[in-house]
Each structure stands twice: as C-alpha cells, then as structure tokens.
Length: 293
Image (cartoon, rainbow, N blue to C red; front, side, top):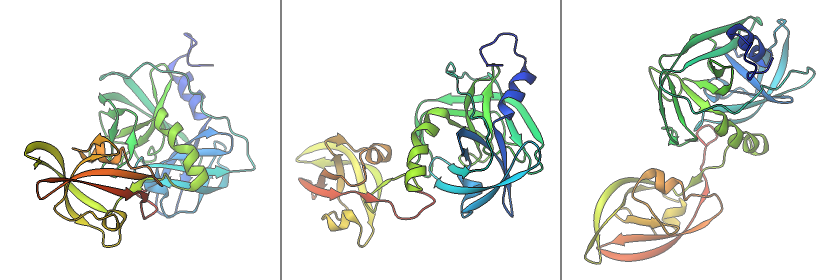
C-alpha cells in the first residue's frame, strides 16, 4: 500500500517501510539501515566506521554478509553492498517540507530480525547547513529527542509514511537529526565509486576578521596556521594573511570558503598582506583521512 493511499493507517506505513529495513551488527554496536537501491543499503557512518564487513539482519532472522563500500563522516552516511537476497528498495515519494511539531516515526530492525519503531515529532527545521565535520546537508530536520537503541541509521518518515531521510546521532548531543533524502541521493554514488565523498583541502586553519585592504575595510578569513606541506603553503600563503575572496567569491566565513574547494581545481585567492592586496593561485587537493572526508 503506497503512502498516498488515504486508507493506509500508521501500522500500514510502518509495515511497508519495514520491508526495506535491515539490521546491522558489529562486534560492539547494533544499528539499522535501509535498502536504498537493489543490493545497496545505507546507514550511519559513525557505527560502521572501521568495519569493512558487517552482518546484515533480515526480517526472518537470517543474516547475510555486507560489504561496507563507502563512508562519509561529514554527512554520517555509509553505503553497504549485499548479495544473495532480494529486498525491496525503500519507496521515496515527494514529501512536503517538514514543520516543527509534525509527527514522525523511525523503523528499525534488531540483529535478531525483530522490527521495532519509535514515534516522536520534529523539533526544529532549517535550511541547508554544514555539520561540525564539514559535511553539507540539504536541510536541517532535528527531532525532539534522542534515538532509542538500534534506531541509528533507521529510516524516518512523516505521519503519511513519506520518507524524510535516515536518523543520525552524530551531530547533536541531545537530539537526533535526520539526514535528508536529497543528501543521501547526492552522496551515495560517490561513496560507491570512490569509497568516500571527495572534500577539498588547502591545509589551513582560519577565523573570521575585519581587515584593511588598500585603505578600505573588508571582511575575510585570517590564516592562523598552515599545514607544513599543504597546498596553501606551497601556493605561497602565509600565517597572518587574510583571505578576502576565493574563486571570485567572498570568503568571509568558513562555509563560504569550503563551498569553493573543488578537488583538482586551481583557485585564485585575493588576500590581504600588510594591508595590501595580493593574488595567489592555490591547488585544491583531496582532504587526507578516510572517515571525516
């Protein structure tokens, strides 16, 4: 029964969604995941990190081997491939923008195969945002509480059974956050292809400042430290420089800077050094490290 049929009840929605929900079992943790496409399930990176293989629990209690194909700590997403069993992909119908107070529910599965669910409400909504690990999420959907055991990575749906995304506990100490469908769609293919989500890297630490360039006040980012052999250092950037624009766009915030860091690109940076305007060409490379991206 599809989520658009008015005769569908809440238990109907739970059962329909549960058909695509699996359990993940590692030596230390249990979590849930959801079949996103044929042979591919998605779940939480935080619980599958450092686990190249994982047991996938099915509804009948059977377990099959899963291969963790990709991890992105920035969006807390993991892609897990499996074979030998046919499970339906989760149905993704367009959903209206969630509102604070909307009823939602999450559906999980234990390593034994037992299906379980939790019911709550949307506690906060907002626009596109970045996690503290630097991941870009299409929309802020924060729930009004934490996650019961086993529901990390579980699909979250509205009262009409329309999928909003999957549940994460990685971005807030007290509240669960929903990783939106649009973010999963954007991240999944790079995870399957590369094993990670490419993130640009210059090798700098910065903070927002107000500086003077050619006698006028400008907003920018003060370079407070440099990786010794990072691309910014090789490009001539120095501690104490203030980045004003990058790739022709204002760089007054860390998010603005990150948005211009495309792996493999050479970007033009306008900087302030000693009150004077200078230009540098900086090569953007892939951020070192596998979990944070």
